[in-house]
Length: 157
Image (cartoon, rainbow, N blue to C red; front, side, top):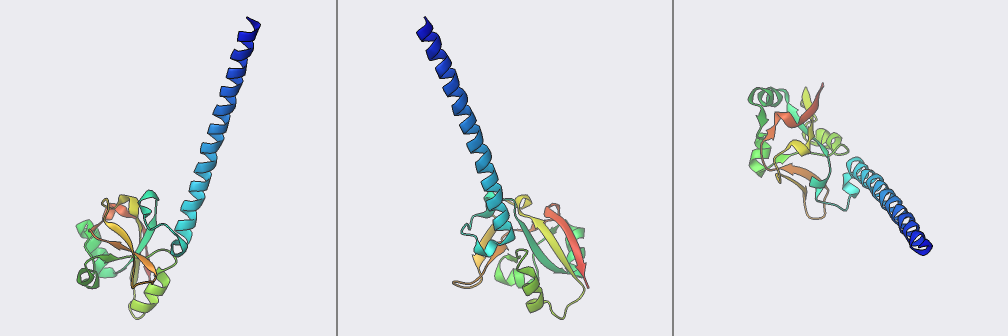
């Protein structure tokens, strides 16, 4: 009988140890996943993952004042003339929009910088694509951007 009690206690201790190890494994993986997500958000160019739908991403769209007013009035943004010509809405990551602003919007002021939560876009409408083979990768949106996906905006004079 003592032998059975010893086995039961051993099994309980073993189960307790297994649960503790499993719990720590899950917590550590969550911390690692959060760090990876933050690394991708902070520096998406260096990310090895192209599939960002697993992550809560923030992207930016540069708009003219008129485009921003139309966006607010309509509740969605279908793209600029350049976007329509290319067949998708051009967007950028945090570290990319200053260069985009300098290159394409240098002499245009005021502008509106719109911050977008990609989790609130239509499923599968966001793709991360290179602007040319081997080039930088940018977010491209293949559907209208709903106003609800806008986290914030900033007028740039």
